[in-house]
Image (cartoon, rainbow, N blue to C red; front, side):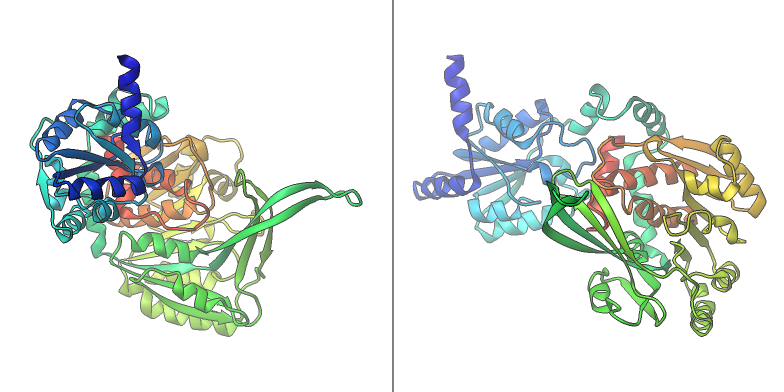
Length: 514
């Protein structure tokens, strides 16, 4: 009997294509079709009550399950893969068929399955509280196929809260921090803080960088040379540097203007303009003495590990006449923005004249000076006589202070006192980030994920979202929390393929604080 039940449950799981054919037959027979959709990462009594209530609305209950790649609840989720989640749902007696969805939302599945009733839980009844904004799209889809939407009113639980309370989804240091943080802030509070950034106008300054990823597979050692031969597979090109920072900021701030520089020859201007968000405008300066910065990385396709990199750049300062043009432009434009966010990669675009203009004319100045293989020891944050918020990593802090061994808190305090920086964030890789506010002291915020796909661009994402948060006057512990949440999402993105978007971040924050 148990074996028969198990087989019956497995038989309920089918492909979406097959389920479309099955529902066509069922509708022809006059059966009323009901559809539910969700992640169902941790099955609980609320799910069962919801599904039973849905079944009472028709003859056949279909459940579509969100696939793993589209579960936007942050790192570590889903806990169970979509195959296991589908099988678990199928084991419930009231469920007739289960299929894993193929798209990020249920809209296309609704259009194909054409349910008479599409059923959601009561937590979706308040449309303005739906983080995704997709419930309206789903309702429009079901109405377009002649069906209706229905909201059940059963007992509800949060899978996220249950996982946070009873399962070790995050490292212990993270659990300890989150327990304390939840006592001060709710997910709704943090999300509202981020939504309030929409009114801000941001100017982003820095080099435009074209990131090329050339995917290869090692073939073996050449018999004639001491080299490893690789086979070319494919390539991707991303808008990096200040362009990526602008796209990150544009998801949270209403108006973003990026001021950047490219080479006059083969400027990549068409590519650059086509890879900026709609609310990003650009002032593009061109220099004849250097190429557009291109960083070509050769990447093992199987493990996404970088083999080596070729850089196309000249990192000497701008010609004097061009530096004058940029300085004049910034003198006029910088005061027009609430925030000036500087992504200083040390490739020659931002010289001391421009820095002095920024220090004098910016209403609120956010600075990152990046240390890389082209400028080690020569691109230090100490060249900025003023900044309202500085965001650098640990090696950059140690180089700036000329100290390899002292504790970070002492160095950050010394930097703050020396140059008057009132807010400082130091990103520390796998240890998280240390944030400092003059009136608040230090907070060490641990990481929220151990899964890393690619670290390229994660620091820029952290800077681009936390900068506006500091302008808004949010507590530095909130700034560090938001920054680490952004970083946890950013390290799951290959290079600068996509920016960190608000909805996935809001969902992750809800998962962390649920």
